[in-house]
Length: 98
View 1 (cartoon, rainbow, N blue to C red):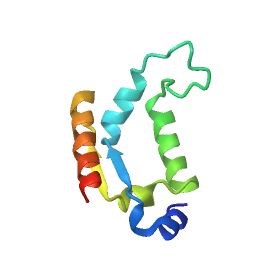
View 2: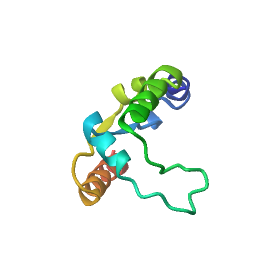
View 3: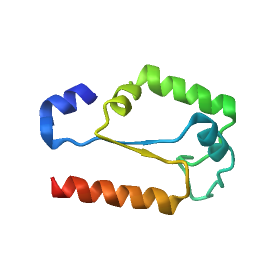
View 4: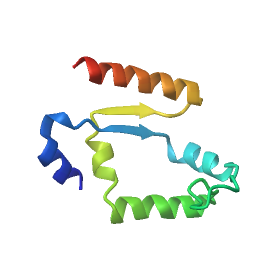
């Protein structure tokens, strides 16, 4: 899908990857609070094994690794949400000004 989109939109497409190391992601996923209104269970908790399995499935089945590797920007999500939001604003401003 990445190659198709990149071929179609060429220089108009910007990919932003948000990365956190697996150990940190798995810790965060295991501590999620489930919202009873989340009917799709999008924010459900995972065990470490479930999260690893999901990661491998996303790499193998939906080719998520390639777009992450080829991203125009990579945000490292190892701090709090305010830090991530600041990174997003900086990238957004840079994209808008180019």
